[in-house]
Length: 81
Length: 224
Image (cartoon, rainbow over all chains, first blue to last red; front, side, top):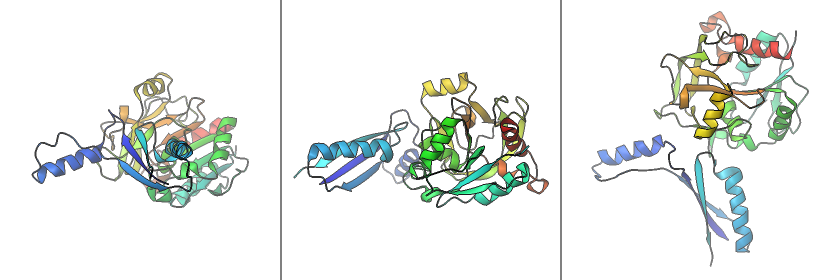
């Protein structure tokens, strides 16, 4: 089973990298970019076939390692096919 | 007066030699190097997590090392009251491991900074700062890309209110944008301290100053 975990900075946490990218877009001539926030995307393949169990495992992985919940949120998405 | 100390070495640590040298120079006793894959700590008065780029800073600085084999033993030692000192990457690891609150984010200026800063002793009553005077300003080098201390407003209020900010960047030398100019913080019990600057590189006249010695002498006095 395949899954994606999206890790994003919480609101209010300063993102200097996002700001730099925002500035670079502006200098490339892309006008009207109100803001850019940078995050991470993890693509995970699991042996688990039960969606509920897979989801629970991915939540644990996110909390314990993939996201630092002081500054980041995470969202787990399962590819159910 | 003697102190049993050890320095934890992770893949990618690079300041362990400086730290081992400084500890021996100041305490007069030979410190031990502790390998990250060990699961038990020797009997020590001070455990140091040194600077470097453990695991290449993959995922987040200190994130992988913080889940390493040796870390449960370090958490247990912290529970027993053993002094734990995290310098630079060591501070990042202690935050990622939950032994200190908050997180060290990318420097606000996005650049790696390698220079000398000034540190103000914000609390001279800690086991890591007692040989300095309250408010004393001293010179210390920094070398990091992720030293921008961040935490939620409630935690920040607690840290400030409980005297757990031990060191602050002084005289406008904050090199990374860290909240309230925080350079070093303590855990609740006061036996775990993390700081971004490198006092181990300011201990002999050939370093330009010896301002960092008092930090280690503080621990030496505290454990005596």
